[in-house]
Amino acid sequence: MENYLVRLIENKEIVGFFSAGSDHELFWLVDECTDPWGCERQKLVGGWGVIWPAPKAFKVPLKNLDAEIKLNKAQLTEGATTLLLDEGKWKPVAIESKAKAYYA
Image (tube, rainbow, N blue to C red):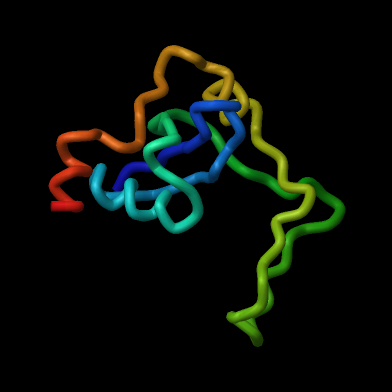
């Protein structure tokens, strides 16, 4: 499994963090929330993270797993911010030849 940061090509807004075992799997994970053809990805390597700074930690509602989980006040670590600003490593999510095979 590889970890990726995905953003929109047009305006560079973050779509999300994804973990996928293949390009195909990443394509379909992104497709659950937006058009993967309009996105680019960067493999997450090195130290990075998403944190909820003290004093208020994020609580997962264990009794109601269908509850909407809001990630309010989450912050990126410095390593993740550096990756986000690195313009040299972004690649399209939809690798055309591989993605077309799924549509055939």
